[in-house]
Amino acid sequence: MSLWELPDFDGHEAVHFVCDRDSGLRAIIGIHSTHRGPAGGGTRFWHYVDPDQAVNDVLRLSRGMSYKNAMAGLAMGGGKAVILADADRTKTPDMLAAFGRAVDRLGGHYVTAEDVGISVADMVAVREQTRHVSGLPVAEGAVGGDPGPHTSLGVYLGVRAAAKRALGKDSLAGLHLAIQGAGSVASGLARLAAKDGARISVADIDAGRVERLANEVGATVVAADDIMTLPADIFSPNALGAVLSEQSIAALQVPVVAGGANNQLARPEDGDRLQARGILYAPDYVINAGGIINVATEYLADGDQAEVRRKIEQIPVRLEEIWAESAASGQNPAAVADLMAQRLIGRA
Ligand code: NAD
Image 1 (tube, rainbow, N blue to C red):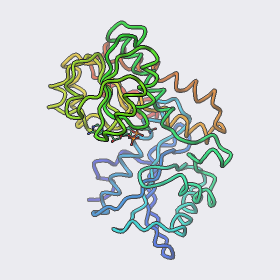
Image 2 (tube, rainbow, N blue to C red; image 1 turned 180 degrees about the vertical axis):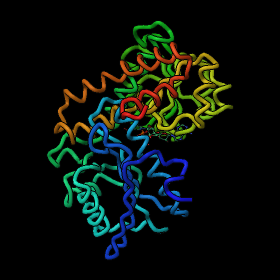
Image 3 (tube, protein in one colour; image 1 turned 90 degrees about the horizontal axis):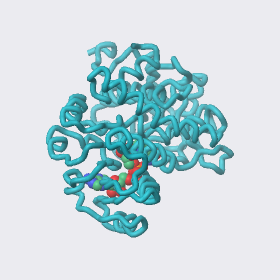
Image 4 (cartoon, rainbow, N blue to C red; image 1 turned 60 degrees about the horizontal axis):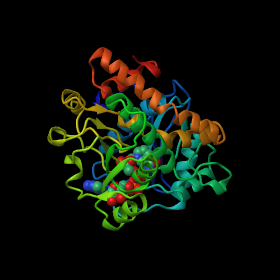
């Protein structure tokens, strides 16, 4: 099958195949859209048993970044890179340098950052070759750093907006929040919600981590297998993707699902399933955009923290727009979000 006919090909502006014989680097850089600005999106370092899967990943993930950046109101398009690792996952300074030169040759059409398998230190190495990098450590002179707290803030504001819309509550005080995960995003959310007086149940497969968080915020620990069937006001997935499936949606006992995990819907039709059960859903890539807002603002506006805050505070506004359009059109919120994103990148 040719590249043009792949199911994930979506009128991508460019797909660059990079090969550096000296270092052994093999990479693919996908530019889905530059309609709103330079194509922003991280670099994934991954061993693909089937290299064709790397192409699919670049196509799918770069389109996802176009949607996410557009819905976050950023002057950025969408792109993504993958570096094809060998089975031993050998990563050398020469490979990173060659990758940096490849990004630089694109002249700012693509801006890279960390993703799975790529560390902040790797991006510092890439920065030696190109200035089209974001997500650098604070010590580098940029206000980058950990995206987690920014993501948590956006998720918290989104959860509050959902509580207002579905439950008519202006605050989380007294509401029961069931949080899946006790990692970076979940912890920040739990702290903010606890301050508001929410009742929190939390689950994680890491027993030590969940205990520590529960003690800190006064939450109840729930078994990982039980968190999605717990009767509560809000279920907030902040661990894994694809947790919302035909089976799990049928078993939910909440009127709201709002959390920061990526790719929560196992299949597109799960958006309809949530809607059919009368459960309000906050589309994942809209509610979890706080981290990318911080990373993008580092590149676009020298990390202006007032601008980061202003943009994160727009997340609940965007969710309101989605829910209002969903109520008017009858389409589920996830589908509405995709349509809005397509309009924002000039592809409606
Ligand atoms: P993290 O690694 O800090 O935390 C994830 C936690 O989930 C871990 O404690 C892990 O033990 C737990 N977990 C794994 N499987 C579980 C299960 N079956 N049940 C309960 N807990 C389980 O990761 P994070 O940075 O907090 O990210 C959480 C989610 O949010 C991920 O889906 C990530 O892609 C998404 N996300 C994160 C950011 C960010 O800024 N960190 C931004 C956007 C989206």
